[in-house]
Length: 479
Ligand code: TRP
Image (cartoon, rainbow, N blue to C red; front, side, top):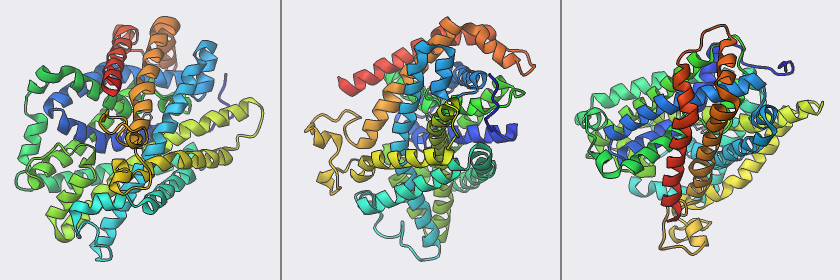
């Protein structure tokens, strides 16, 4: 089928920037450093790299192939490949929807932080200057402000996605991504020259695999989940972007570039956060999910004065660019599925209307995440109870019931994503077979490399790896 009715990326650079924009997000700048901080630094990095090379690249190629070969978004794409797998397409949409419901809330918070520091630079806001130890709690339990910032973030997303692939997403990422790299470098350099920063590099790059000996499965499972999330794999976003990719472009080369850039940004974010923890927080890297907000706010507070506010602004502005370029890929995955349906049925695409409907749905389902004080719950002064409070499970904190964000995350990142990736790799390896992948990659006129390696990846490494991850997740959630 020809992709006549479909607009696409104007250039391969634009495609790469958009795909990197999708990949580089809160996962890199928030998730990666905090998970590394809690899972042994170097040991985590090592496992992450192995997984990205042995699983990430192959799955990325697989998704781009499915997208480009069919020229369709996930549901229609899977249906076209085989009716039996249509359900994978639906899973690949449930997942971005759930992720968006918490991603938008976090994005809104990041925006609030960026604005706070910007205003503080000019003395208009007391952000990060007043009593900082209680700031996070006061802010997150203020339901009105959480909801307003979430809505602002959703509206910005909707405006960009409504403008389409070439006109909205690509334009934003073409400017946003290079900016992000420059700001990353500025903040890295500033942190590097602070006394005590060395400890952070030692923690990240000093050879130490002790943590693997004590808890290999935890490190493996955390790194694998992180890798999938960070690369935007396992749920339709990359299939969607692949469907807009020009036939001339080389899929394998693009996949490698995306994986390398994403990993690079994760490591660079680590090179801000870890040394900063050593220079300003006495080496406490175990801030957990609060690392991005509480620990980093403390870092900029301890830097102090104008420079602290300036660095704070630059840092959160960077996180903002990263977050929004990711959330728009999720919104695009949802949107394009409906657009394709309209086009299939011979109707007008109606992109704008679809974006508005999804934005409203996301806003509604995001409410629990915005209103439970990110886990503070009614006990902590928030408007809504946490899942644990709601179900009366106060003595059994399981990593999914302590806040609604973790609940949504459990369903999406924890379960749907590994299941989706497992079945997809299995289908490529055993049902559609390698030639399916090779043919599409070679259609741009270049030779496919590493056929045996990719084959083993689809047939064995990815399905088995995902099974192990799923086992690890389910036992940690429910037992
Ligand atoms: N990769 C993004 C991050 O690191 C999040 C994201 C965007 C995502 N699109 C996705 C995750 C699709 C899974 C699937 O923050």
